[in-house]
Image (cartoon, rainbow, N blue to C red; front, side, top):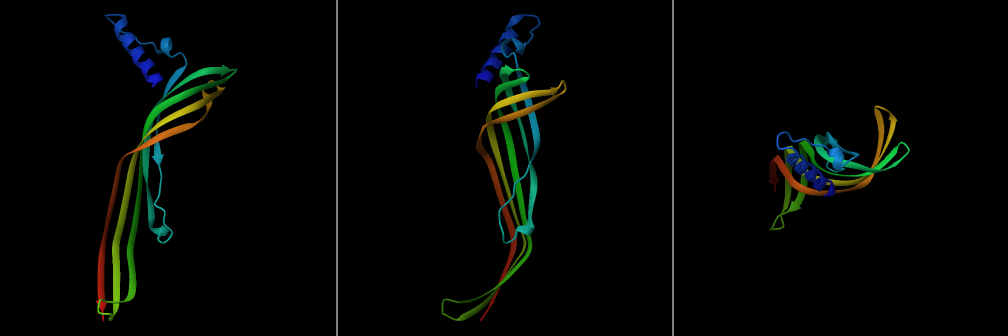
Length: 177
């Protein structure tokens, strides 16, 4: 929150500096900070041992941004804190073409019944979207002028914002006495 308040203060100051041409200098308020954008795939799957060969994981995605401010320098190593926001979508699909089962049971009159059940084109789709708020401690080490190594640790508070579940199948049952 502190980072965003400083950013708002810098923006307000820039809008009020010159009536004719506003200019913005984040270096004035945030001397060693950077904004990072990220995007990439996310993978997940439905757990299940019985029909695991039929599980198809579909790639979801994650997209986000964070602001890192470095406050400590020791030689070439910089340490700082980072806060941001991201959205992640997870998606899985489970397909089963044919499942048959035979059940021997009794009916309400205690007569023996042979029941044949068949399921075809069974599909389950699951999707879940999350908003994440990462709060991290970061380290940065410049290897060369164009290559840096980054290390981070911290927590990410995640909140489910949407979810979706769809299932469909063709079910056929027949019985014989």
